Image (cartoon, rainbow, N blue to C red; front, side, top):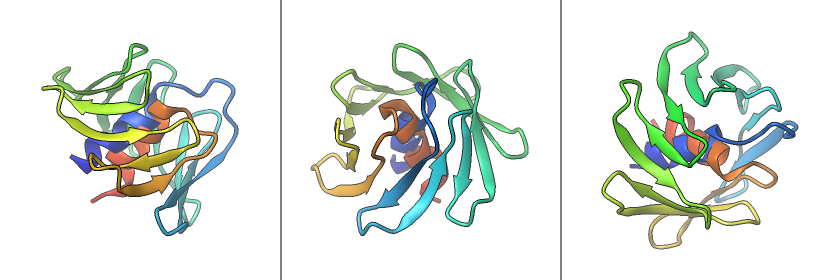
Length: 136
């Protein structure tokens, strides 16, 4: 479930986004998302991409999923994984709350416990990061 929340945050937005760092709840640098959708780790290595069509891939090109402009998140075969709502609520395909992404960049779990921060990062891109790249 944590990976689904990450996918949500990182993928949809970002046309005017410049490189923004993603941080853990303890303020540890986890990585960054560049304006072109390149996703980098804390060591600055490329770990994935968010394409202009919403496709999320690994650095080797493996498709992880898609983030649609309406906030819908799908897996690589098109199955619905969840949604990023306009208010920042992240849900799975059954509408179960997985977490929240606030306007100030706080990323939290279903009980509002802090997971991390993505200040200046669009909600969908932040979700994608925390779903696909941070939690293993």
